[in-house]
Image (cartoon, rainbow, N blue to C red; front, side, top):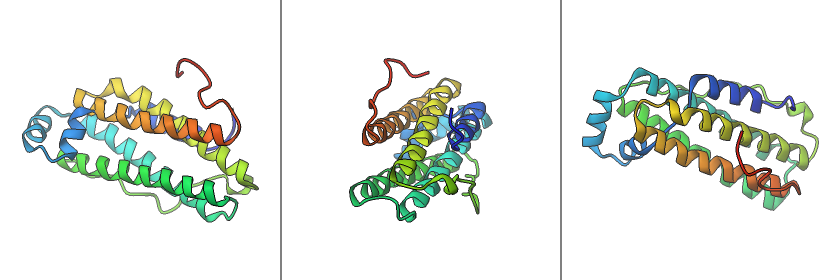
Length: 186
């Protein structure tokens, strides 16, 4: 294991249970009937899980910003980092709106994150850092999906999990590694 923040993110997400699903997607799509049903049946645990996921997405946005501003990324990789950052921004927006619709208060981004910037010396280091974050996100979402009381939220989280897995695979490919290291996620 490396000492990049993926372990922190994985632990943060995994211990609190992260997941979204169909209800989240429906809530985000503005389906008020589903929102009312979900608010009635939704639990504080679901809001907590969503807020944990939101915190991790905000961390990912900040991490990609560090990579983009590092001056270490060549044009095609920089464009990829900005694209992935945009995906995390979309995830964060959806999570935040869902939390509000469920009657919760979305967490805010931290004023400062502790990233291993001193270890980022070249493009490969930045790619490994990003890949470790994405791997942690995959593990966290995988662990969170079954924890939702609302199965629709679990489905939405599984959708985000798929996006995180694709990010991880693309970053591994960019590093010259097998994009999919095994048949199963641990």
